[in-house]
Image (tube, rainbow over all chains, first blue to last red; front, side, top):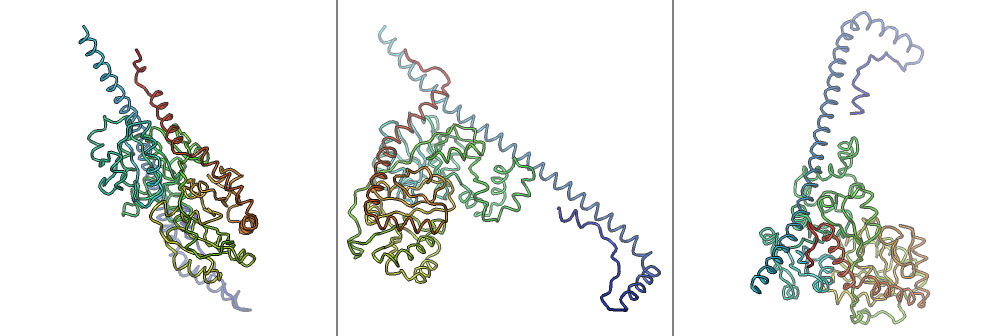
Length: 116
Length: 397
């Protein structure tokens, strides 16, 4: 996404030439011809493409944020689930302890009853 | 107290199965025990005669009969069934390995369950902003194992965590563990087994270095052999034993031995099926090398076995190994080859040093690692936890 944010805007590039002596002349001719014949046509297309690119990057960013948000919610739920299962585990142990105490008390009551 | 005990059991090829076999008779003197195993009929006959061993389904149907479950958890697929039970029915967990990443990876990604792996990673990394991008970059990186331990779900659900070292306790606290953590030493008994040295046909004056247990790249056997080769040039009586199964680089090992020209001075035993025989091989050694790097916070049962048999150790000074007594172990900076050579050389030169360090090692094991002490400590911690979580005051009158 970082790379996309850097590269979404398509930009005009100036003509260049590596040719010695005549290079500057060639660049000037090509630039002049471009200004006269194609620039007026290509520039609006470039602007339109840039607008589409900008919107796409914005949409992708929003989608990514939504996915991260949903994942965070799921993880938060998983953590809550873990805490609930832990608490249930504690209660299971306590239930066992209570059952043992009830068994012990019942035995004592039976003993007292039989003695009376 | 009636414990539901979940663990790999012999003959499973894992140190935790041996651990349980050593601990159980002592634990049984303090508490009632029922063992749980996915296939009870596969468990070693000696244990089946001593204990009631039930399938997991029995626990699910009879949960209220047991005071609480106790899980012996490690970083291998031997623990798949009990891990799922520990998540569903929380109990006390002995965390033998702090890092469960390899295990979680194997039972999720390894089974085609990408979402399960992502969920575990999300649970571990999810508190950091931008974690999803971090996960995506990390998911195939070699350092993912050290970045995310993936023990968090198990730890969060458990009632009480046992670890074998202060290092383990610090690591758990650093990752935000909210459950009580107790340190119990790893139980260790000394096997008095006849030495296998006679069958080696090595000279009586030989000084035998040994690396124990599964031979993996993380045990740095290549580094040990390189420094052994240097030592061998000066001490032709030096020998090297690789006691255990070669895991995943048999060909590489043979190439290394040939390149170092020490083939005649090195013996590879392969997998040793029973503890008595394993002890016999340890008895044949003079010095034990335990050079694990990276460490995943594990306690080395093989290092303790060596110590129990009066063997001095050479270890890297990190993780649990840092906590070993200085009198029993030469601790060198991790991956420092020169320091390893010097340590090997000093022990090869001095029988007195080997004897003194071996004595200190055996004393340490007898003093802190006897299974009866460990069983008592474990039971005391469980009792304390039960008292602290009692629904009412105990009926005393």
